[in-house]
Length: 207
Length: 241
Image (cartoon, rainbow over all chains, first blue to last red):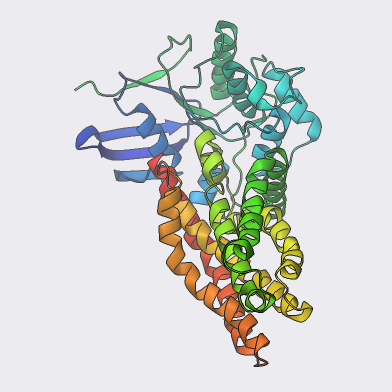
């Protein structure tokens, strides 16, 4: 049942007079897991930000369900979850408030499911502590709690595995696999060796 | 941590829950202002200091203060707003929330307008509440304080909205405080001229409807157009990040 969700054709991007990639084709359908690999500075983050529609300095075509992305921005954004290096956790707000602000911008949500999601992310008992008091890994988990509330078919995860412990990495792997099995599509960049069943690898900076 | 998500994968249509998203944006801004009180209090103290130093520095004569008082309060309010601009998007840019906010499936210009309104409520309204008090301190007659408050009420959203365009464009620039002030000051001049002009005309017994009409036109124009410019500026800044 693989339908193509997001498609990139002939992407070309340069940064500071250096060509990061050119002629890059990528098609992501439901059930796909794509890992973007490559050394530091090879353009993994740039590619993910281009796919998220954040970075606009590229050449080539991006299609969402076969339509040009720039014409479908609202529709695409309602169905895409992007998690960047800086996860958007506000230090002065509690994990619960952070999560609520994020979800309420997107869809209605029961209060109980916010608590569930935070518990699922391993933050039980930390819901009401200002995020500034949490460790880096815990702050990362606040951001990962969004994944438990997400209905978005497309996940773009940039270095999602940084700062979290071994156990959490394992859980996140299975979360990603089960997501793909449900019909979601995941594009991620990481230096971790992942134990994912079916995972395509897109190598950047090889040339 | 749970290995599976409870929510199913669903393809949704674009754009729903505009009211909910607006309320969230508004509420979040007020909540942060409440938690980070110094960001709200600093411009207020700055405002109070400038206004109270003028009589000491130039002349405490009633005659002089009655003439210059409205101008002093206007300039001080303008500078205080300029000072608070820098904080408008900076923290959210630094922690990445701005990205997530720009990526939310809502019309960004509307969200921007809501957000700037929340900032106006949190940091400009307290400043306006101080105006009658400072007016009395500068020996302004009560009716002239009324006109002054009215012009500030109409002018301050214009200052904030225009300033937010600059803030959105410079948020990705390091130490952009001075750059922002330099960029924005020329755009503030007309607002200042018509704001203080109304109070002066009122003092001379002339009609102020012309001044107020122009201020009102600026207000309507910025409310309608500035959010689009701010939204475009934010998209550009986020792209650079």
